[in-house]
Image 1 (spheres, rainbow, N blue to C red):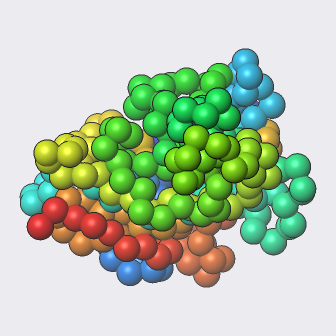
Image 2 (image 1 turned 180 degrees about the vertical axis):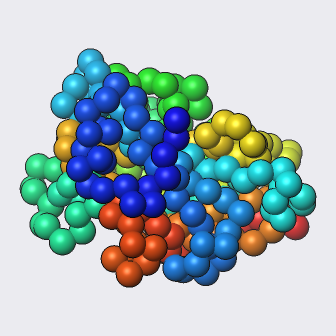
Length: 266
């Protein structure tokens, strides 16, 4: 049974991390930072990695709204995201300095055909099914599904591609650049037809977790703060923050605040 993080303590978070696959909680969203009046909810699942990801924790972030909400009456699905993922020393702990070796883990695939692996920061090589279920070979990413028509407008840090000028000569090695990333941000949107479907329809639901929009992979026992903004193809943009200030809702692990721009269907 999925648990709300209202009153969900740090000890319970750590116990959830020890399970084979644990729903960590559900975060409210707001039409402004700090509010909880948004139609979207964000759900976080935590799963220990296996195989090549043994020794890592996999955090998955889903967005959903119900068909009967104000958003659901006009919109068809999630279209844009602006999300930042920050590694924490422990779940919910924003005060303790993060150890030097506690970094996000990415998947590296040659995407510009120069025989040098690139950082797959939008999960171009990871299907929606794999993003939801694979615990062995995926990497950290942010996107609106499907990845093939997701347009990333802004990515930080840079250096995701080895040959950014496309001259056939590698300029640097992204596997080195992205080996020590503790804070990662992507802003982008799902293209409208004819270039793309315009939105991820799995966000509009009453029963499932919704649309997968981010995966964060960190060393076991470390936490992740996800914050930013979500928007459907129609309706208002909402803010979320999985680790709010102590005065915001009184949560140790979750809440609602951040900042983002969005592009929506006109």
